Image 1: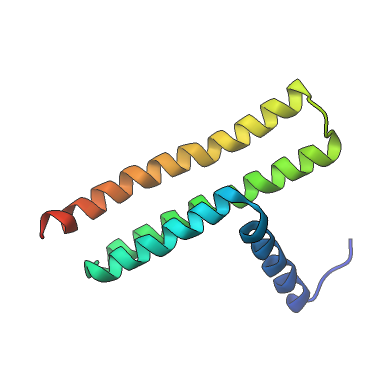
Image 2: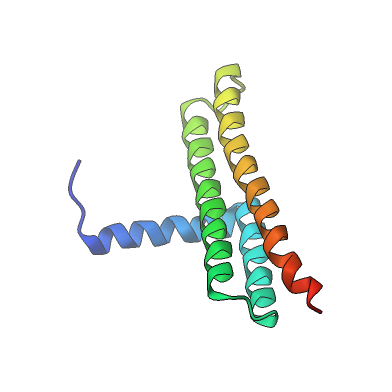
Length: 119
């Protein structure tokens, strides 16, 4: 495999990011939620530590969703018809996103609740 320049690698990453936003419903939803969370953090004047934790979870969940999408696309390119083995791979990949999303949600509630209580 050819070594790419840093610029080519960056361009490929941006292309993948744009593809996800254009064509993947779950990524669109997560980007929308990210915008809402950022507005809430600004409105409630979150501490730097709380902002960093929320941003870290956002990055983890969205990155996992991109990985899930990549795995699903790779599996579809191998076999586009139903396969029990491919279903297991896709389900496991989706469950990783679900677990991370659930942990992010719980962490977010624990962080946001202290700001909401202060109203």
